[in-house]
Image (cartoon, rainbow, N blue to C red):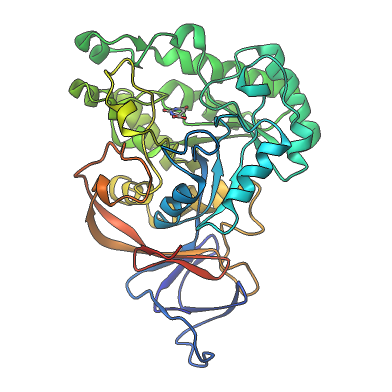
Length: 424
Ligand code: DOR
C-alpha cells in the first residue's frame, strides 16, 4: 500500500492511496481502509506517486568490466534513482552482439532491483564492419540496437541496418560522432579547449552524423532514436525532421543540461564524457528543446569507470560519468518545467521508445503492473560519491545541493527501495 501521495501519470493528477496485490495495482482510492492483514504500508505523504522511471541508456559493464559496475550494482543504483527499467548498453566485453550475450545479461538482471533490458549491437563486436545477427536478438525481445560508444561510420552499412530494423520492427539508436572529425579530441572544441590546450572535437562531428542519419531515415523509412544529443545544431535538425514527419526520437543527458565545457578548466577527468560537455549556448539549446518537446527523453548515459582509470591525465582517461542516482534530482532542481513534463521525459516517453509500455511508464491504473516510484519533491540532499550504490565513484556532482529525491521504488509490486534504502 502506498498511502497519502499524489498520483501523477500521463492521464493527470489525483490524490489517492494505491493498494497493490500480486504485482499489480488492485485499488486506487482516497483513504483506502480495507487492507489485508500484513500489508506493507509505504508512506507517501507530501510525495508524488509516479510510474517508475525508464532509462534508455545505462552502461552496466557486465560482462567484462565488473570492477566498474555489475548488473546487480547498476540495477540497485537505478532503483535508488527511481527507475524500474533500464536499457543496458552493449559496449561490454564481449559486446552484446548475439543471442548468447543478450541471454547472459538478461539472466544477470533477473531478480535484481530493476527490470534490466538490453540494447543489442548493430555490428559484430561494435566494429562497424558487418551487421550483427539482429533478428536472433530481436527474437529475445531486444527492441533497440546501437553501437553506442561509437557511431556506425559506414553510411552504406547504416542504410542496411535501417532496412533490417524496419523489417524487424525494432529501433536503431545512434551515437552520433563522425570519428574522422572527432578523432583525437578529448573535449568540446571551442574557447575553453584553446585556453586549456586540450585537443577538441567540434560540434560538427556530432552534427554531421545527425544530418546523415536523418537523410538515411528519410530514404529507408526506418525509425531512429538519437542518443545523447548535445549541440544546438543537432537539436535544430531534429526539430526540422520531426516537423517534416520523420519518425525520429531524441534523448539528452542531465550532464548536457547542467554542465558546460568550462568545468574542464579543473583538468579533472571526472568531467570527461562523450559527447563532451558543450558551450553555454548549447546547454541553453538543450533546455529549450526539453521545454518545447523536441527532446523525447532524458537518459542518463550512466557510465561507471573504476577510480584508477579516472585518475589518469585528462587526455588518457576514459570518457563517462555516473548518472542513475542523480538524474531525477538534477531534472527537478535544474529544469524550470512542471513535474508532469519531467516525468514524461523520464518515464512514459522513454518507456514508449523502448517498447516497454505494457509494463512500465504507467498509467497507474487497476490491473496494471505495479512499477512505481514515490518521489519527495522537496527533499534536500547533497551528492556524496561515497554514499552512491554504484560500484564506481565518477560523479561530476560531488557536493552539489539538489532538491527532489526518490523515497520508495516498487518493482512488479515488490518494494525494492524503502525510505531511500535498497532492499536487495
Ligand atoms: O562518455 C561516454 N562513456 N560516452 C559513451 O558513449 C560511452 C560511455 C562509456 O561506455 O563509458
